Image 1 (tube, rainbow, N blue to C red):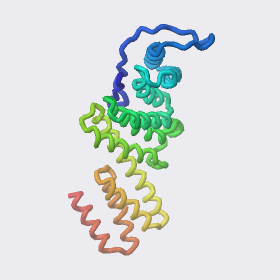
Image 2: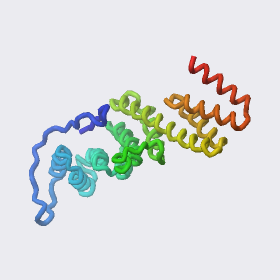
Image 3: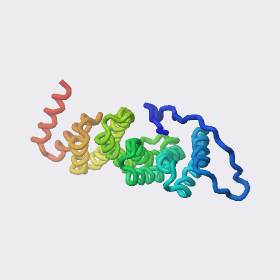
Image 4: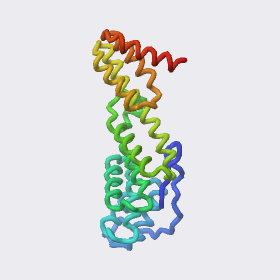
Length: 245
């Protein structure tokens, strides 16, 4: 099974309907054939019971590490962790899968999920419910996600997940730029113009295609003026005029 992402977040999860033999978890634990665990995991994923799905997939890893479903259980465990909000576990599981199965046909999916799980470390529940702009927060995870998704796009430009990864990286690129310039604005407000220049130049030099480039130039212009760097001020002013013409 290979999970697919859509432009919102995920395409519909495509899981073949499987006949599942029920098991009673109230009595003593009984060793079951590998396929029973796998089928049970599929049923639990379909019903969005990700905690229980994780238990079933972990059981396959532990009891049948070299079995028929072992590799598939490992890649689906990445998905189950991610959907259950266990982003550190999803990232670790993706890294483990990449290390153990570098030539697996679904390796692109593991690289994708590695990048996505890094970003979600920054989007905590508190940020979502308070509608806090993540651009004004510590976005270390977003920067890691941008780097990891860039690696994914370099390695797998023809992957079915590439369009989604590209859109995600555009969003991350602009958010990282806003974060840097929020800091630059603060430095301008307290008269720390050298620090403001450093942040604005970082955006222009390292995130050249972001939506915040003009804002970065304006900060540079103001900072150079206040620092008395008139030649640099005039250079930036000319660039701004060219962009506006």
